Image 1 (cartoon, rainbow, N blue to C red):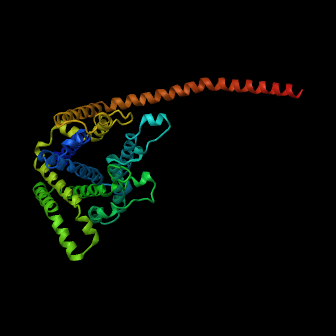
Image 2 (cartoon, rainbow, N blue to C red; image 1 turned 45 degrees about the horizontal axis):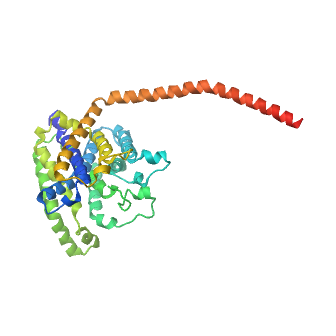
Image 3 (cartoon, rainbow, N blue to C red; image 1 turned 120 degrees about the vertical axis):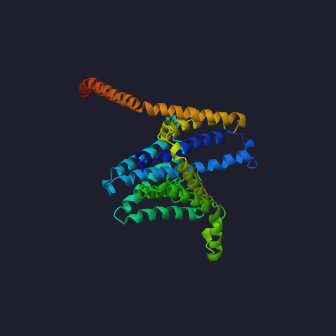
Length: 398
């Protein structure tokens, strides 16, 4: 493989595609009038199906990228510098996820609204990164295939039993923890089963790392991805039906009521195949920059669409009220604006952070100066007050 191929540009392009699909998906889903949500309409049906692919692709690619960088390090276990970076990244995503759900109006009234504790995609990706690190550390001293085996087993188990644990209330946990496992309180995403896409992405990255110098890597990978995708999309349900009829296992009966996780995983493999086929066209600098700016794009879109912090987002004013002729070009404009702002931020990120750092340092300096000026004055006032009270008490006693 060449250096460019080793960088796997098609993965960055997949991430860029997923974040753009997320932008238009959130915009249309949030603002399109309910009158036009007709599944029998072929245009809406196609849009709805592809919208369902976005999150699985995003989680899978996130697991792929993090693990690909993690296992490329020659060091193992806690000595791997990617472990510490990953822990920081995971905690950072959790923090940002909660900050985006803050409401300044509530804070000014001394309240934290219940929506602050709901779990969204950033929380789950952050926790998924921490989970991948945990699996990596637990298997670091084992044979190499153990890591891959645990990753695949995690995906299969989470997907097989999703219909079972979906009914659990997790009442024994505080709400802010239960929100990671159940949507009963309003969480948009939950760590289970979505961690399963991150682990399968991690497994695919292990395969790419292991065979990265193989002459026929891409022809083999494309063929396997298409085959696995086809089997999962069209044959997984008949397979589980046959196994259920043979064994009578209850969890398979529940799974057959909605086998969407395995079908969506098949879609993910097909998307992988398409982007690998088109990998020679995936080296555009802007596309790669978009793929590297997903966090900035997500934060900006959350602020504009949902009114993070202020509550004054588009969703508040146009919730389920726009016609297709308005919402479709609006979604395109929304994608352009969010992407442009994110790319501008990333271009000037170092300068912005230096200005913020300077502002914080300046504020600290001012606090120290005020402290140095006021402490002697306060001390003198305390001494005079103490002397005054002594005189008053002496007079009273006399």
